[in-house]
Length: 107
Ligand SMILES: [Zn+2]
Image (cartoon, rainbow, N blue to C red; front, side, top):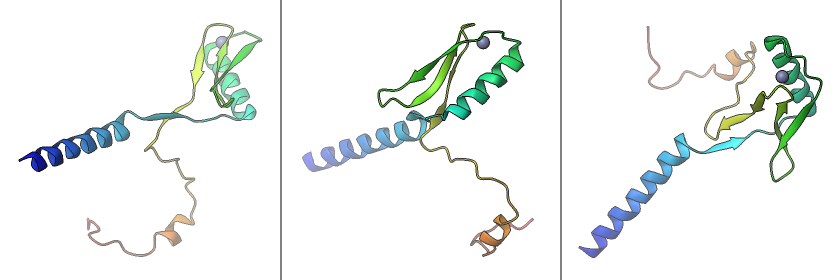
């Protein structure tokens, strides 16, 4: 009985952790200065913002993860841990995925 309870408890912990990892865990994606400048330019173009200053938002590891514009606009680069970086759509993809997958849907 005790063993079963322990197993149940550990499975429960594992499940909760997995769900948390998949849906809650977020990491900050560091930005390069070029990214920052581009994003700020984009914000200014989009909103007609005329601010000439911005302050960087940094993490404890001194990585730039966003900025705060003088107008009050704040940008933070957030990404889910499980979210894949979008791959560029190149014709090469066809060669890489040329092997037929099992259980492939037929239309
Ligand atoms: Zn602004």
